Image (tube, rainbow, N blue to C red):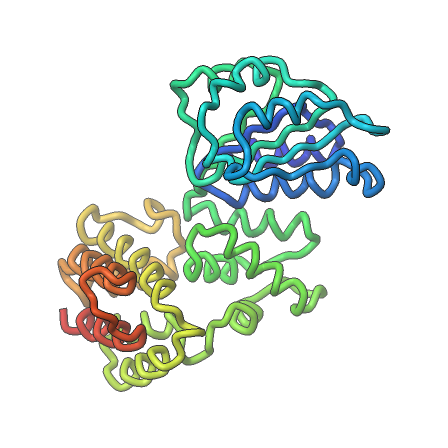
Length: 330
């Protein structure tokens, strides 16, 4: 998946454009990145006025796309037609013939995010056999995210320390869009003369030195009640900097790895993480013996409560306090 993405970006940078790009899958970042590159670089600024158009799935149907794609460019080698929110479009089979033989002077980019196109339909088979590019954007395995972070920064002539990349992955998981936004923010403020380190992440990604999920995790594992009380009070009264959904997501990922250690006896290599993080999972496994799956269920319950399911409107900070104390005494 990653190699295909890098190969595709390399061909775009070399100005080797295909007449059709059908971008579909679960990972929105790759779809957005490819479409944005084409939108910004396929045509000159002078050509874009007459030859570049962005349409949205909620406003068009298959016939509209086909008719727009059949037009010829004006004083340009190509016209660029980008279809966003394409997951809202129905009757893809009406484009079967076009997918088999797209117009060479059109660069048609279809952004089908939030899931794959149905492989059973005729249009999918036409995409497989046609002269366009069919690109499936898959979620990146979390163990591969640090490598992706290095690659993302490398093309921007920046470097990052290994532990800083791992920390960012621990904090944001495999949400590449959030990670890219965080890295872009860091690049604008951090010194270009040295690799990005954990201090840069702390200062730019909203991780307080004392009151963050990492310190909360340490206090939970050691069941340090004075530290826990201080961190919980701070985080529950500063929910803008520490949103409840982010905390839920972080700890669900953390305890899923703890469960893997407890139930499947996974090693650091199995989980694709470094030894210094694996030690925390081992400590948590000992601190909450046999409880990881139960805590994950609890996290799911509170996620639903935050969204209004089986809850009459408990404040975000109060939900956070309640959940964390339940975890402590589970």
